[in-house]
Structures are given as structure tokens and as C-alpha cells.
Image (tube, rainbow, N blue to C red; front, side, top):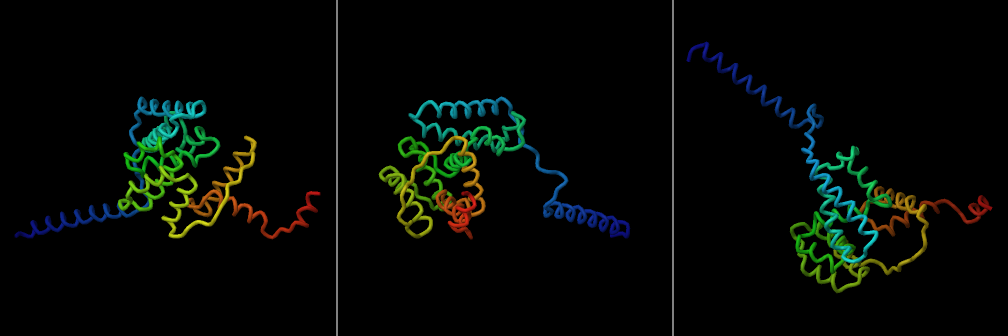
Length: 240
């Protein structure tokens, strides 16, 4: 091979090596000059889905029958809104801002419905009319934790036959390996003006403690934090 041919071969090899190196650097860098493209916005489909969500939410306030069936449908549409970024049709900045408008009291319910759609098999979702969406939420916890190992049939049977609180304890026992302590349900009245503050406090506590914690546990920690370092005497003197 002539000297010129060797020179050309070496030059092309070095050039190819440089391209590969730049490619690898681009792949391993966490900061990119070219962020991923936004999903193509189908405005007609987006408007249809957003309208369906509003219809279901309005229907929920008027009608209690077949509610769980519609909630499964709502969870499916919410997942589609998030994936397709349909909130851009309404000139919103994020999916969270979209949820704040549709679920002003608490976004937790929306995420529960989405979790049911994402993690439960279709045959289980069809039976939520009999089971109820709150039990569906517990089933979704199991399905998310066990993945491909999740066997739905015996748990669907338990969901049908057990009261809601008993079924929730059964799921907790399966997930944690221990039975939950005895408990009771307390009822008290809240004014609508108080609900946003309480919900925000519970959601903040859940973010700090872990979203797998129950709302009762979050409330206990909020109360414990309030009582920490305080005595009845000093507090009553302050407010009297």
C-alpha cells in the first residue's frame, strides 16, 4: 500500500474515532443543548379528552350511581392528558396546574385513579363497578409492588367479600409483612374553607414522610410536630 493510501486510511480512522467520541459524550452528558421534542399535539383529540374529563367531574357531583365505572374511565383520560401534554390546549404550564383546576380540593384522588388505570389489568378494571374504586386503589398498590408476580384473582375475590377497612388491612399486611394495629374511624365536620388548608398540610406531610404512609399517620405526625416541646400550661396562658 502506498504512503498516500496509508495517510488517507489513518486520517479517515481518526475522523471516525472523533465522531464516536463526540457521540458518546453526548449520550453520557446529563445536560443537552437539544432537549427532547414535545409530543405532537393533536388539538382535536386533546379537546375531546378534556371535555370528557369535565363531563365526568360534573356528573360525579350530580349522580352517585355507576360512579366507580366512570372513575376508571376518568383515570384513563387523565393518563392520556399527561402523556400527550393536552394541558397546552388551555395554555397551562404543567400537568400539576391542570390538576389544580380540575381537582381544587385534592390532587391525590386524581393520582389514585391514574394508578388504577396504569397498574391493574383490564379484566380487574372492568369489575370495579362491583368492587369500588377505593378497593381498586388498594389493588393498584399490590399490583405496583408485585409487578409481574401479581395474581389478581384471589385478591379480587377478597375485595368483593371483605368490608373496605378490612380489605385495606389485608393489603397492608401483604405489603409490609405485619398486621396493622387495631384502629377506629373518627368523624368530624369541616367547613369548605378549611379543607384546602388541611389537604395541603396532609399532602406536604406525605411528601416529607413518604407517599406510602396513610393519611392517618400523616395527621398524627402533624399533631406530634405541633405538640413537640409544648406544655398545656404555656399554651393556655398564651391564648387566654
